[in-house]
Image (spheres, one colour):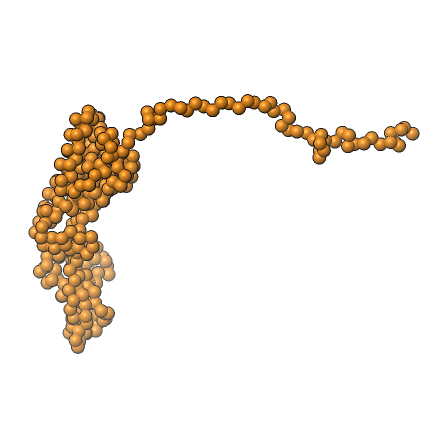
Length: 303
């Protein structure tokens, strides 16, 4: 028998896991000398953006990128009122031009408002024409802006305007309201419960005037059966396309109603576009309404 059978070799002499002779995966790495810090001692001013208004540099930049007089004063970081905004902006522009600032020849319109403030007098004339012949004491103004325009102006104003500069939509409403107050001195511009609302689409310059409905309260008695409380559309044509033979081209199942008996004379008198009837409860068509009568409110739309 060989000696190896009696004296087994010690396997731990060949093992490396868990001992001080364990394999080091980082042993092949060669130490490197640390690189010297990059010398960033350079003039940072040449990489800095233009200082915003009210600095002269910021105002000169507004002129160079084509801002209109209204937007120059709006973004200048200076107190102002809209009745003299154009004059103040023009004065700032002249000072900038005296320092050598010039408008970029490639700019065709104000990058902030797209010349909305410049064209505001045209809007005022359109509104005056639209409201001719309408009596009102409370007027409210609303403006619709394209979302892309609002986002772009907000970005430009943040980068090039003074801190706290008024946003375009708010500024536009304030400027237009100030001009309309001069045109309609007998009316009050309000923010709620107006008698007439003027909505302006700033993209198309389309103006839509909405008159607040007029509401009249009363009581009615119905002395005859067979009259519905409100208009009843024809069962055949549903009142569409000007009616049908079944309803004699009226679009109505019944020729009259309590709504029309009361509302039509009022619609003509107030020159309203239409009426809506709001009764306190209702009775069947074949039922009379006697006694003190049923309370109702008649709504005259766009009187």
